[in-house]
Structure formats: structure tokens, C-alpha cells
Amino acid sequence: MYPQQASLFGGGEPGVGDLSAARRTRLGAGAWIDTLPGWLAGADDLFARLAAEVPWRAERRVMYDDVVAVPRLLAHYGAGEALPDPVLERARDALGAYYAAELGEPFATAGLCYYRDGRDSVAWHGDRTGRGSERDTLVAILSLGEPRPLLLRPRGGGPAKVRCPLGHGDLIVMGGSCQRTWDHAIPKTRSTVGGRISVQFRPSGVR
Ligand SMILES: O=C(O)CCC(=O)C(=O)O
Ligand SMILES: [Fe+2]
Image (cartoon, rainbow, N blue to C red; front, side, top):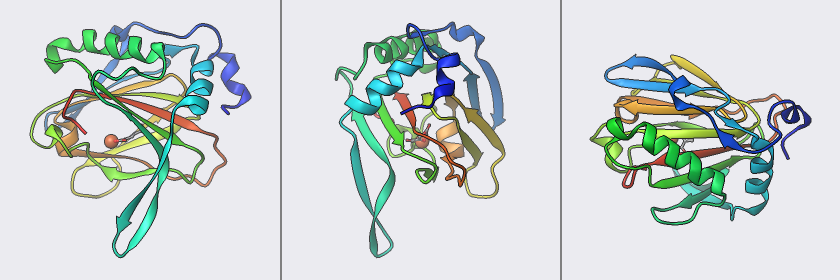
């Protein structure tokens, strides 16, 4: 459950704000990010509903010779599938309308990740299992619950170059060549943190 502090600004009716307030940062090599803190108002109930009602899956993955647990819970909604909350459908459609010219197609799928505590994380990667490996695309992420930083670095290694703190209701959009030329990660943390849910909207064929 998301802690007390949320009620200071996350209570009330959920709704998305004006996307034209997003600020663009150019990362180089044709990659950019847009950030918009507090894009979704009234996110408390949404976090609680998603945490309780989404059919979260624990995945396992082969790593070297071992099968290890993926350190976060996952759910995926394909194109045409109803999302677990109407607020998420409004968010997806608002993003699709705002980025229509740059994206050239709608946001179609939603990936949900539940980071239960600071031990849950995602390692450095780009979303390039699908078309993101060859073509510019957009991935929009709505963050709910406990703040966690999203780190970015140019593909190929080295230290993080950009640190985006993502709090309750915050939006980040990775665009241009970002999935191809940059990597991103949510690092583990030793501090005591509660749950965070990330909702990633992607066009069809981008994973
Ligand atoms: O948790 C996040 O916001 C990032 C998740 C992510 O990068 C992914 O699932 O591909
Ligand atoms: Fe990713």
C-alpha cells in the first residue's frame, strides 16, 4: 500500500493534466525525453486498485546456468485489450493525441510493472525486442506510488548520465532514437521504500 504522504497531493478524483507542460531534454544521438511531474492527479486510489486487482505475474528467467526470479511483478495488456482502469485508457488516449504527429500511430499496448520494495528493479536495457531496435519510437511511462529514479546512459555501458526521479503521478516519455541509442534502468535501493507501479504505453510491435 502506498504510504500516508500520498494523501497530501494524490487524493481526490483521478485525472490527467495538460501535456503541453512537459519539458523536453535532448540527450544527443537523436534521443530525447519529455518529463512532466504530477501529470496524473488523484493517483492514490488508482495505485491501490492496480496493486490489488491486476493479475500480477512473477516471472523467472534463465541467467547463465540458473533460473532466477525477475525482481518485479508484471502484467501486459495487448492492443485492443481493456486496461485495468478507465483512467489508464484516458491517459493512453491523451498521450496518443498529444504525440500523434511525432509518433504517427497510436499508443496501443500497456505494460505494467510492480516494484514491491527497494529490492525490485530492472537492469540496464533498451526496449528493443521489437521495432524499437531499428526505428525511432516513443515509450511513455506513468509512475505511481513510491518515488524511484529512472537512470539513462548511452548504449554500451558506463555510468548513468541522466537521473529522472519518478514520483507519484509523474510522466516520462522516451522518444526519438532513445530505445536504440540509450539504455535505461531502475536500480535497486537499500533505503526502505514502498511499492511503485510503472505503466508503460507503447505502440504496437514495440517491446
Ligand atoms: O519501471 C519503469 O518505469 C521502467 C520499466 C521499463 O523500462 C520496462 O519495463 O521496459
Ligand atoms: Fe524499458
